[in-house]
Every structure is written in C-alpha cells, then in structure tokens.
Length: 136
Image (cartoon, rainbow, N blue to C red; front, side, top):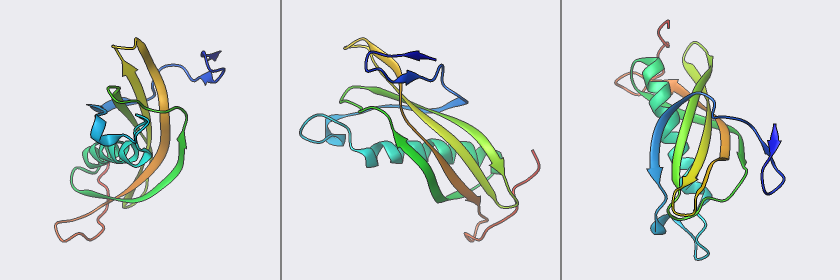
C-alpha cells in the first residue's frame, strides 16, 4: 500500500465489479459543498441491490448495513462508481461488500476510495416473503 496526499493508506484498485456510476449534484450537498453521507449510502444500497438481485435471480430487500466507513468527503461534481462483490450467500440472504470510488475530471482527482461497507439483502418472492437463494 502507498500513502496518498493526506497520509491515508491507498488500498489499491477497486474490489469487485462496477454496479452503478452517478454524479454528485448540488442538491445532494450541504452548504459547504460536501455530499450528504445518506445520499452516498443510498447509492451504495442501489449498487448492492443490483448485485444481490442478479445473484438471487429476482427481488431482494435490504435487511442490514454493517461496517460502514467513510474515508473521504465527496464533492459536488464527483463521479461516484460503486463496486460490489458477493461475500456470503446464506439460505435466503446475500452479503455484499461495496466500495464507493470518487473521480473528478475538473479537479483532476481520483479515483479515490471514499466509502466502503457490507450490506445484507434477503431474497423475496412476489408476496415479499423470504425465499431460498438459487444455486450459483
């Protein structure tokens, strides 16, 4: 690992596959121009839901968020890429490791890991009841 300009350890390239990319907009920020943590958490949940639903071959619902860690602020105009990796599959649940990376071409910054966490989803049927996750 190498240290970046803030002295934090760089964890290397993103882990997993890119699930979504979006741009942080002014409506998503506080008066100082920092993006709300809740907005970033929502983007990660969408990305995790994409990965979990693909693995479950159908609907899933978020049941837990664990080990959420914010490393650096996200600014207006940053492109956020959320990478996902299935880390555990249970009978009805799927745990997804999610990393959010920021790039800003105007300020020539990134890619930088800004947030990471583990989200757990449960596979659900048409009535919203838990169902078994199919074999891979």
